Length: 204
Image (tube, rainbow, N blue to C red):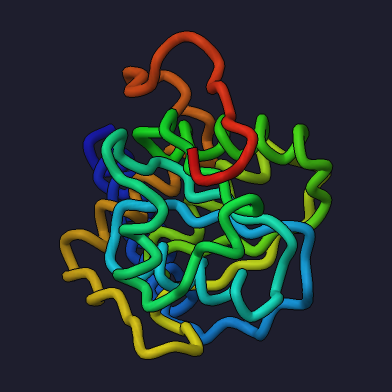
């Protein structure tokens, strides 16, 4: 019995390591240039994500943008200045989502926004190491929306998010596995119990 247990643990460790090697390879792979889409969603929380999303919108890559998980006191004009993008003419096409405090919350917020704006195709902007989990949550939240990943590390801009260390990437891979298994739904909620209320543009 002990030998069987040791063998089982060894198989599980080998599977985790093999999966992690795949994960590290995939998250460092350059993205293909996405087509023009109905919308863009940036899952905020790291350097370069908002900047890239604003530049994609300004370049005509999509008709609407959701900045999901923006802090309550942050305004669109400030974000635009940091990104070097004049948001004055884009404000009515940008929504600042202030509901999400987690990747799962990003999915909930995106689903409400996508339904309100009839989004059927979506560019997803986040860090490369976060992209697999982000896509898993979004596919669950908006199964009928076509998703195109645009990781910051592979961005066509000069804004690049600092790569994660080995420990952070291993933690993210474990979270990704928990998301795929459905176990992440049992984690404590970080968002309000009520559904997100999406503003009607103007960066509100």
